[in-house]
Length: 261
Image (cartoon, rainbow, N blue to C red; front, side, top):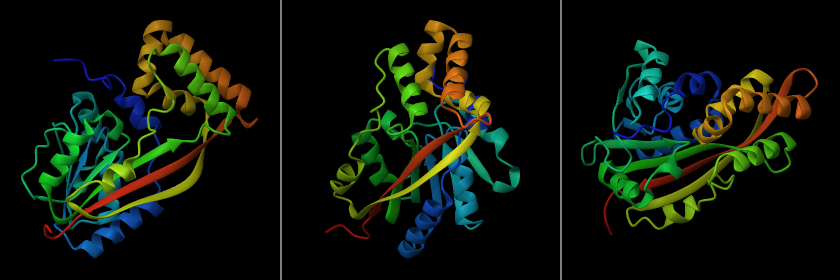
């Protein structure tokens, strides 16, 4: 079996990656309440469970929630980071062959991972597993490198040291793809702009948790990459040892119609 590209990154990922904005999760919950679908959710590509646990906090105890994640390292970290009272089960599985029965979900979520999927196959699977009135939700925290010398320097470094990488990897017309679903009766894109102040150490850990940094680390060595990231933080930081990372979080929604036309 081929190595999962996130193997070895789970501990650093969980320690350094940000949460998702509560305002968008609240809007997701409101849309679900309007749909009145089944109260069972699956988070695909769950990683260390950052969104999966947020769904529990947002949707409450009445929902059955599970995380689906192909990587053993990520599943291990997700289980370790999730308190037993959250009642979340993490299962092995991939986006193109979901381990869910037909029409069994009221919510199917994806966080930070849609660009890795075979999307046409995943969209067909979404149609299969969602119940009538169910919702597909894709959420992603996008670092806004435009106008940020720090993030621009980081993206340039990765492009120069990880062959094949481009900062435009999320330039996907997801709303256009959602609008093409013959099974959806509504689609929507919501956004929230925000920023996060973190220490230079956390910035370094956050960037090293990216799967796209693994080739750079393999080619140049972890010490070289860490030193380069710390130099960026020192040059473009706030003067107090912190750096500011601007984000735009996107939430894409596609709601499955109650009946076929």
